[in-house]
Length: 503
Image (cartoon, rainbow, N blue to C red; front, top):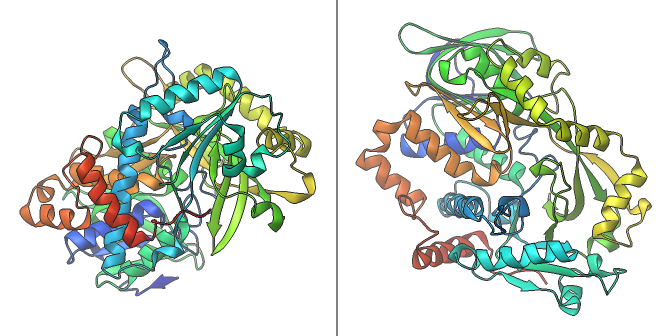
């Protein structure tokens, strides 16, 4: 279906491919900065945010680096590298400012529909891990973004923080935890759909569901010709656009390849699937009120950091454990098993083979994860929750992730965990590849895209002024400005209803 459909074949200023959080964020930013822009949005499914942005598919809602230990690796000299944690924490603050602006302008629904205060905690056991967590806490205390974090090795205090995790645990075991009450749970599916509802009310915006982009071609005049197929009726159409954003999650790589821009050559993708254990016992769900992250198993991908995770989905509290990693050749949850094979091109086959050889332990890990029995999954859960019972949990399939494979200065092909914006030199097209922590940092990622693709307009007084309205800290750094950070948090927490932390 199409909403507010105009003519079948037409020209427009912007085409957004994929109805996830990235396209929603970019679309809203562009319409706020330049209301006269015409935007066409194409989504291959029949609803927005049904793939990686959906609450059940998103592996780490509310990423802010407060509790995710993979963002603070221990270096060879034993020190803790907090640079990535600082970058992610600041990016999340920028996202919150943007969301607060949309709330204040009555552009999107009230914040309770998508954001809730939830403590973020890290929990470890064993002397080596406890030492690591203590060093991590000390390192993070040097930055104002992590002010308010509390560290404890006291079992009695941890009984109060995480009763479910502590119940039945050996009291002689060496344990430690950090707690950050500034943490949140974000339902990116609800947020994304709310932003698209806003966009659809704006003049010049047309949204098409069940429409799949089949091909992209650059024309001599610098515009793009896009071929689209209606998956419900089989009808085909062509549209021309000055700018294209490919925000199709796992489907972005194939479309980037079709664009044939030089900057997109050599990129490959490594798909990783996931599953959750979802609690079905309300009495158990009520005993846990936090996002509690542990340390990833040796050889596992970073997005597989185990966590016992309180979520608010459709207004109800849920409790998940996982994710359990797996392997599928699909690039999308609703994709094809031929996605991986079709993505192999002459310019990326060597990087993909090189990355595969370098990541044999990861491949073995994923195979072992796929072969896990229900009893194996329960044993992993019991490391967090010793008294877990099989009958209280059921398996839920999570979203599909495609990690970036690319060349760099030192490697023929390297597997990267994170997100990457790939854009043409002339700024006429950009694609987002990769996964975590994408959703939480969507606003910062899209600001980077604007710098690359709308650089001249971004320098204008009009755009600069508008960006500072939407993001008051725009152009400044929060990480080394405690007063500015405090001011920004004070406003966003008030607007987003984040001043009270559930007991």
